[in-house]
Structures are given as structure tokens and as C-alpha cells.
Image 1: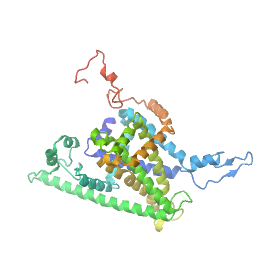
Image 2: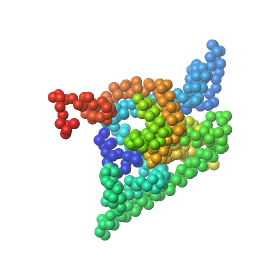
Image 3: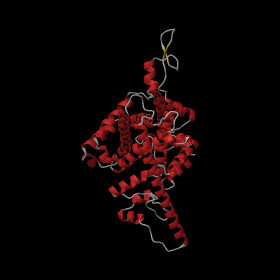
Length: 427
């Protein structure tokens, strides 16, 4: 399964990017669904118990203050999702990449993600990508914008070529007018038309999603906590979208900046300070964990704010089927969150990593993420990861003979064999 799963993602053109786009939407829609089916209701009543005066709230005798903090606010649901649904798997996936990929559930997830991307729901992201490609002057290496004999540029070959070879590689070559060439040209034309049609549909859906969501917020027809004015809800919504987007972009920018020359980073004092903080001792791992906590918390809050709730009526009098499948499922909110709070920010960070890290807000967000991780609120994930590893019999990548992946600095075992020396080929 591992070989098949990795081949699907890496050996078929730009499937890796397509998988990431579809997977991001899948993650967000799961959060919206969990929030919809498992959130505590707001109209829970409390009744005094005649026996001992404790307050009864439907889950047994739980103090009202504890109920408000854990259940009514959604904190308990958020912690369960982060610990069980995210960090536990991520801890094992970091050290046991091969075994983690070696199951059919990963195969199903990859195919669903690719199917989501193929549907065109998120194709307006490519429009943003094209815009920044024009701004930065960097060519896009995708089958819908550049092609070789098979319709797609090989990424590794492109990067290893000099500038003249890159231009030549991105330029369609004139071939003799044969039946094969004509068929290929026609096929490419159909692909272009199909691609741009999905871009138009995606932009239309995104605008419709924003219109419906903002209308519902103004009319107070969402699951937003009671007592908060509609205009405050809208402000909080856009602030959360920006906050999540910053954290999504920070992950991309930190990986990009670390490969830049030191003197280039020093030219931006703010970026240098942010990089020094995130790569100090074990701060990078702590940042990734804290970032995951903050992103999930914000996604649940966004889901709570913009999930449509019109009671027993239908929005604008639409049919029950449309109300159930489109408005009530939270799919419109998931589209907004995936594009507006994740993918667009990732594209910006990938094109301008140093400028992104030069934002003073990045330092504040880094500190927030480190504080969240430092509280240990989700440290139980490490214990659960050990249990999952034992039950599923995961082995680390080093145990499989894959050297220098899980821990690049720990190669003592790789340096010693039975007779004490390696030749270059074996190493």
C-alpha cells in the first residue's frame, strides 16, 4: 500500500499539489461536520436537585461553570479533535512515515482528496497562483499552463536546468503535422477548456458562498453565540480568517526561509528575529504543535460563527433538499475557510517567504503558538501515539533502513556496521 499511495501522489504530474488542495478542504469540512453533529446545544436548562442542591444539566451532576467552560464553549470537543484526530496521528507519521502510509485508508483519503480537487470547487486558487506567477515572474509548472511532449513539465528536470533550458522546456515545440500531433493538440485544448470552465464555476461558487454567509450573519441566522451583534460577528469572522491564514502561511514561509542564504535573511531584522525564535532549540516542533492547536480552535470558531441555522424554515424559501445539502451541511463555509483562510495565504507565503516572515505580527503569533504548546493541554497525544504505535505495530523509518529522514542528525547507527566500514555505494 505504501508504494501504491506514494506513487499516486508523486509519479503522476502535479498530483502532490492537487492532493494538498483537496486534502485541505477535506480537513476543513470534517471540522465543520464535527462542530455540527457534536457541539453542545445552547438551550441546556439547569434544574436544582432537591437532594444536595447541585445543578443537573443533562450529563449528570456537573457544575454549571464547568459545563460552560468545557461543553457550551466547545472546548472539550476541540481538545478531543486535536488530540485524537490530529496530533496523535501526526506524532507517529513523523517517525513512522513508511508504515503510516502502508494502509488502504490512506489510499482512500488520497483518492477522495484528488476527486475533490478534480471537481473544480477550489479551482479559483489557481487563478490566485497565476496572478502571483505574473507578479514574481516565476513560471507555473503545471499541465494547464506549461507542457512538454506529455503535457506536463518535469519539476526536478526544470529546476536542474539553466535559464535558457528552462525557457526552451516551457516553450511548446513545433512538431510535424501528424495525426498524433493533431490529436494531442485537440486533447490539450479540451483540457484547457475544462480547466478554465472549472475556474469560472469555482469563482462563482466562492462569491455565492460569501454572499450567503454574510447575509446569514447580518440576519442573525447562524449558530453564532447569542448576544453578539451581527456586525461584531462579521468582524470576528474576518479576524479569525486572517489569523488562520497567517499561521498557514507561516508554516510555508519558515520552510522556505530556512533554505535562503544567511546574508539575505539578515537584511530583514524582523524576519531574522522571527527565524531565530522559531529555530531556537526545540521551538520549531513546539511551534508546529501550537500552530495546529491554534488553527483547529480557530476553525471550530469559524464553523460556529458562519454555519447557517434558520430553524424550521428555509433560507429564501429554497427547497428542503437544497437547504439540507448546501446550506445546512456547512459546505459553503468550508469553501470560504479553505480558500480564504488557507490556500491563498499559502500561495502568498510561497512566493514572498521573506516578506511574509518580516511581518511583526508573525512574532506575536509565534509566541502564542509556543505558549499554547507550553501549557501541555494536548500533551496526552504523545501517550496516545505510543499506544497507537504499539497496537498497529508501527516501526520507525530507521528500523526499515531509511537513514536520515526522521532524525537527520542521528546517524550513529548508520555509521557503524559489523566490520566497521562502508564503501560509498553502501553509504
